[in-house]
Length: 421
Image (tube, rainbow, N blue to C red; front, side):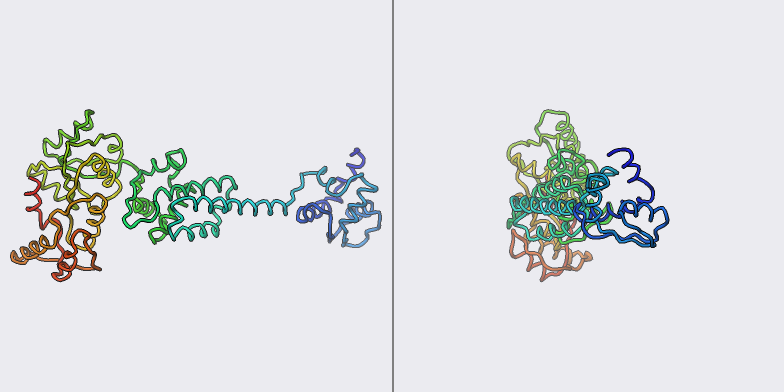
C-alpha cells in the first residue's frame, strides 16, 4: 500500500467505520456481509465517507453496505478487499466464530477423552462417577482452562480416584496413602494435590460424592474428607499408638522400637517413620489390636510384653498402614473394641481386612461384662443407634439389643491385661 493511500485510509474521519467494520467481520467469519450503521457523524467523518464511498454523505447517519465497501476497496481505492485493509491497518482480525467453534470442539474432545479414560478404569463400576463427570461439565472451573490443561487435569483426577476407589467389591480393602505419595503417583509432583490446586478440587469432589457427603468449604473439612478416603494430608501430624513392638530389622529405627518395648514405653509412630521402618517380626507374632488408648496406657503401666496397636477410635490411614505392613510380615491379629454399634462397625472393618480373631468380643463376653457391671452397681450407658451385625458372631448384635447397654473397652481392661501378660 503506497503512502498516499495509507494516509487516506488512516484519516480520523474513517476511524469509526473501520472499528464497526472490524466488529462485523469478526462476528461473520471474516466475510464482508450485511451493513453497518454510523450515527451522529461530524463534518470530517461525512467528508471522509463521501470520498471513500464515492457518494455524498450529508446527514448525521449513514448505512454502509459491507459488500459494496469491499467491492469499492478492491476496484478503486487500494486494490484489496475490506478484510485485507483491516489487517493492514491492524491489529490482526480474529475469526470469533471459528474461535468459538474450535473451543466447542475442544470441549467435546476434553469430555470424550475423560469419558474414555473413566470407562477404562475401575471407576466405571461406581454409580457416583457419572454425576461427578456431569458436575464437572456443568461447572465452569474446568471449561475455563486451556484445553490441554483441562484434559491433563481431568485425566489425572480420574486416575487418582481410580487408585482410591478400586472396582466394587463386597469386602473392599482400600489402600492407605499419604497425600504427597498419592500426588507423586498421579502427577509426578508431591505437591500436585496440595490445597488450592484444580486437581485437588476435582478429586475431593469425587470423594465427597463417593461418600455421599458435602463438598468441603474449609481446610479442616478438606483434611477430614481426605482421611475419609484413607489419604493422610501430611505424613507427620497423624500417628499410630503402639506398645511392645519388637521388629527384627537392623537399623537404629527398629532398635529404638525394641528398646522402648523393653522399657515398657508406648510409642507414637508417624506415617513418615513407617515408610522407613522394616517391620519384619519374629515368626508367629500375634498383634493385639485395641480401640482405646487407655488399654495401651494400662499395658505400659503394668509391663505387659505382648505387642499392641491402638486404632484410637477410627483406624486412620497411619493405623491401617502399620497393620498392613505387619500383615505383610506374616503377623496374625486379635481385635477388641467397644461394645456399641460404632465399635462393632470398626471391629467388622478390622476383622475382615486382616482376618483378625475376636478378642473377648463374643456374645458371652458381652453378657459377662454387662452382668458384672450390674452386680457391681456400675453406672451404665444406654445402647443407641441402629444395630450392626457382628461378622464374627451372629449372636452378638441380638444379645446387645436385648440387654440394651453400651460397654466401652475399659470395662474389660482387667481381662485384656491378663491376656497381654
